[in-house]
Amino acid sequence: MNNISPTLAIHGGAWAIAHTTVDDHKKALDAALKTGWEILNSGGSAIDCVEKTINSMEDSGVFDAGKGCVLNEKGEVEMDALVMKGDLSAGAVAALQDFPNPISVARRVMEKTPHVMLVGEGAFEFAKKQGFKSMHIRELVSDREFHSWKNNHEMHFGTVGAVALDAKGNLAQGTSTGGTRGKMTGRVGDSPIIGAGGYCDDETGGASATGQGEAFMKIMGCKTACDFLKTKNSAQKAAEKTISLLEKRTNGKGGIILLSKTGDIGIAFNTARMARGYARDGKIVVEV
Ligand code: GLY
Image (cartoon, rainbow, N blue to C red; front, side, top):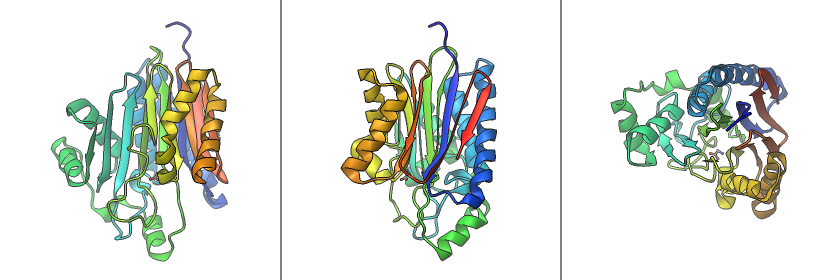
């Protein structure tokens, strides 16, 4: 394929992001985009770009993922993550406890097992066997989230996601989250579910969602967005149609990033703010 502009689109959640945290969000998005762009720009693969970009957001402590993840009703972490490549290979973890980079564990599920998803204890044991380092919950989770868990259960949809197109025309997507604050133990959201919180197909495009997982699951949000690309919608139109459908059919709130197989970017949300950005041709754009 000729004339491909490697492209990376990311999000860090769609919700009523507090004004006082906008700068932190922008800085963390910018750092993640720089990390990912360096990989794409030096000829790296879409999947490497997606993993490292998301690792940067997981490590930042700013988003509801990795070190910033929210706690469930018992004050535990249960993280969900999915990676998917445009050739439809995929790996996911759900309700994974105490590992700071669930996206990397999900990638390992894709590359080292015959399965697509591991959950709970099985995911934990697999991560340990693969040499990932677990962290004590107090070391892993930010003071902000311990405070929030004890003092309020205000909604927080700070899931992170990335979709990349590399110079060879390969697509990949990743999505990583701590889920919803105060969620029931064992609750799994849309993020690790293929087609709901993430999807990727070299024949159409790649997408990652953020927001009310139960709503995205009901409309298979990311597969739906990619399917809209089949009928000659621009990526922007396809993203907007997906969020309209989410609202119309489920009254759900959230946002989506979509990258077509030609690198057309679509971003839509129906929340007060969405942390988002992209990198292409050496230009990095961040908005919150
Ligand atoms: N969208 C993330 C979640 O609902 O868990």
